[in-house]
Length: 86
Image (tube, rainbow, N blue to C red; front, side, top):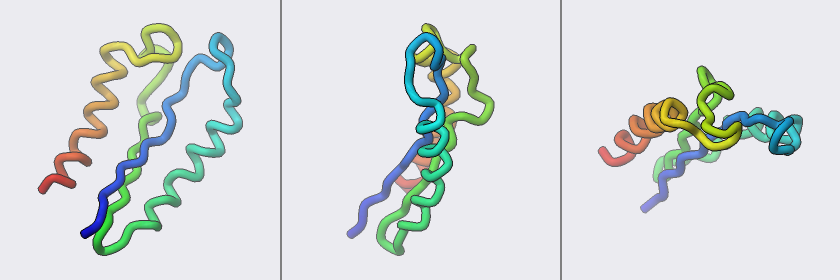
């Protein structure tokens, strides 16, 4: 039997206040969708984009999600997880 995998892109954060290498995050996020090609008949690989319609306003402190950010993340992940459970 296989293993189903969910991979999310890294949500953006306030790089100015918390550091980090935006170019590296952008490169990783751009590469993540190609991981879907690793899926097999036995093992699904689902990619979830957490950046679309997600902004710094969805953070409580510039890096951690606030209530609206958490809801957006949950709304994107829940259907994928439920689909795997069926």
